[in-house]
Image: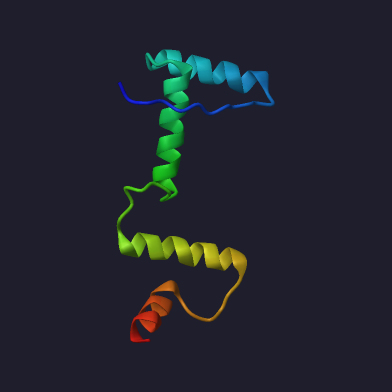
Length: 86
Protein backbone atom coordinates (compact mmCIF):
# COMPACT_ATOMS: atom_id res chain seq x y z
CA UNK A 1 0.00 0.00 0.00
CA UNK A 2 1.35 3.42 -0.95
CA UNK A 3 2.01 5.87 1.83
CA UNK A 4 -0.61 8.59 1.91
CA UNK A 5 -0.15 12.17 2.98
CA UNK A 6 -2.84 14.43 4.36
CA UNK A 7 -3.92 17.78 2.92
CA UNK A 8 -6.55 19.92 4.63
CA UNK A 9 -9.06 21.70 2.46
CA UNK A 10 -11.29 24.43 3.83
CA UNK A 11 -14.06 25.86 1.69
CA UNK A 12 -15.82 29.14 2.36
CA UNK A 13 -19.02 28.08 0.62
CA UNK A 14 -21.12 25.09 1.70
CA UNK A 15 -22.61 24.96 -1.81
CA UNK A 16 -19.20 24.14 -3.34
CA UNK A 17 -18.84 21.26 -0.89
CA UNK A 18 -22.23 19.91 -2.01
CA UNK A 19 -21.26 20.27 -5.69
CA UNK A 20 -18.01 18.37 -5.10
CA UNK A 21 -19.86 15.55 -3.32
CA UNK A 22 -22.39 15.29 -6.16
CA UNK A 23 -19.71 15.32 -8.86
CA UNK A 24 -17.68 12.66 -7.02
CA UNK A 25 -20.73 10.46 -6.54
CA UNK A 26 -21.64 10.71 -10.23
CA UNK A 27 -18.19 9.41 -11.09
CA UNK A 28 -18.24 6.68 -8.43
CA UNK A 29 -15.42 8.32 -6.45
CA UNK A 30 -14.94 9.44 -2.90
CA UNK A 31 -14.68 13.18 -2.40
CA UNK A 32 -11.01 12.66 -1.51
CA UNK A 33 -10.30 10.80 -4.76
CA UNK A 34 -12.26 13.35 -6.77
CA UNK A 35 -10.36 16.30 -5.26
CA UNK A 36 -7.01 14.52 -5.66
CA UNK A 37 -7.71 13.91 -9.36
CA UNK A 38 -8.79 17.53 -9.84
CA UNK A 39 -5.64 18.81 -8.17
CA UNK A 40 -3.39 16.46 -10.18
CA UNK A 41 -5.10 17.54 -13.41
CA UNK A 42 -4.60 21.21 -12.59
CA UNK A 43 -0.94 20.65 -11.72
CA UNK A 44 -0.39 18.90 -15.06
CA UNK A 45 -2.21 21.68 -16.93
CA UNK A 46 -0.09 24.30 -15.16
CA UNK A 47 3.08 22.32 -15.89
CA UNK A 48 3.87 21.88 -12.20
CA UNK A 49 4.36 18.11 -12.14
CA UNK A 50 7.74 16.41 -12.03
CA UNK A 51 6.63 14.44 -15.08
CA UNK A 52 6.99 17.63 -17.15
CA UNK A 53 10.46 17.00 -18.58
CA UNK A 54 9.97 18.92 -21.80
CA UNK A 55 12.67 21.62 -21.78
CA UNK A 56 10.72 23.96 -24.03
CA UNK A 57 7.64 23.68 -21.80
CA UNK A 58 9.76 24.47 -18.75
CA UNK A 59 11.34 27.48 -20.43
CA UNK A 60 7.91 28.66 -21.53
CA UNK A 61 6.72 28.49 -17.89
CA UNK A 62 9.76 30.53 -16.85
CA UNK A 63 8.96 33.13 -19.52
CA UNK A 64 5.36 33.41 -18.27
CA UNK A 65 6.60 33.84 -14.71
CA UNK A 66 9.10 36.48 -15.78
CA UNK A 67 6.33 38.40 -17.59
CA UNK A 68 4.47 38.55 -14.29
CA UNK A 69 7.61 39.77 -12.50
CA UNK A 70 8.61 42.20 -15.22
CA UNK A 71 10.76 42.21 -18.34
CA UNK A 72 14.55 41.97 -18.26
CA UNK A 73 15.04 42.03 -22.01
CA UNK A 74 15.83 38.37 -22.75
CA UNK A 75 13.78 35.21 -23.12
CA UNK A 76 14.55 32.19 -20.96
CA UNK A 77 15.97 30.40 -24.02
CA UNK A 78 18.40 33.28 -24.60
CA UNK A 79 19.41 33.28 -20.93
CA UNK A 80 20.12 29.53 -21.04
CA UNK A 81 22.19 29.90 -24.20
CA UNK A 82 24.11 32.82 -22.67
CA UNK A 83 24.81 30.70 -19.61
CA UNK A 84 26.17 27.92 -21.78
CA UNK A 85 28.60 30.31 -23.47
CA UNK A 86 30.14 31.35 -20.14
